Amino acid sequence: MKKVLVSIALSILTITACGPRPQATDLPSDINEQPTQINADLTPAQRATITTLSQNLGLTAGKIKLVSTEAVDWPDGCLGVMEADIACAQVITPGFRIILDANGREVEYRTNQDGTHIQPATTLMTWKREGGIAGFCDFMTVYLSGEIHGSSCNQGQSVEGRMVDVLSKEEITQLEKWITDYGNLNIDASDPKGVSDRMVVTMTFTGIGNRETVSVPDKQKLLEFARSLHQKLVQTPPTSLRCSQTCWGYS
Image 1: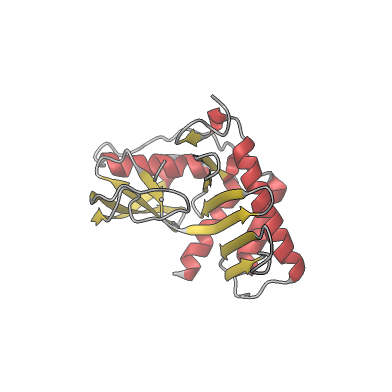
Image 2: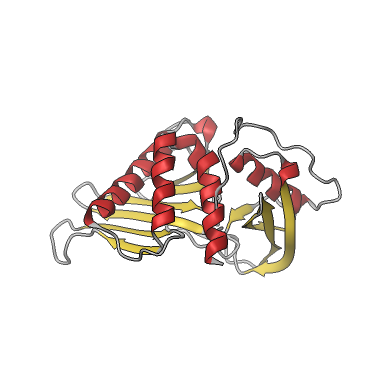
């Protein structure tokens, strides 16, 4: 399974409101290529997930295969995927777990019955910044399938974007290296307990490598990368994002 997740992550990164996690292929010549050749016999949920993955990876739909579809009664409106500072409707939500194959690599999505709610299901990174003199309250989840979900409880807002829309080619290259080098990391850069105006900064990272400890320089680079990614996400024009409310100060 670890090898499968690795391939998906690398593939997506090189090319690419309550809601919801999944290695990488070469960057396509046109990441805005529209989905084509979607089988008309597929269900609405299957078609929706194929379209989503096609747009994230910049692949035509004909290059994405449906591996399996499993009917699931999800425990809540977030389809069983919890994100920081996101409230989920506590209601059983019938839907599907859909596995797709893109260039020989599998990706999992979760949906409701008609495919109007789609949630990626494999996390690459989580990042949290709370407290401090400024009273930060920022959260972010990055998915291996290319989606980014960010929120700020101070502003009561959440926003969604894609890595391909907010990261430069150089940043994607650096992220690929970390994914290849590192396995599971848990980073805590918080101030000591008891400190006045204590700042809490934590991060998790799930790569495909074998290194389970991070050097001090890479630790700082990973934390700065996450902080910068969150900032880029919230500064991206609203036309490139989906927002649960007003989009970070934009009307």
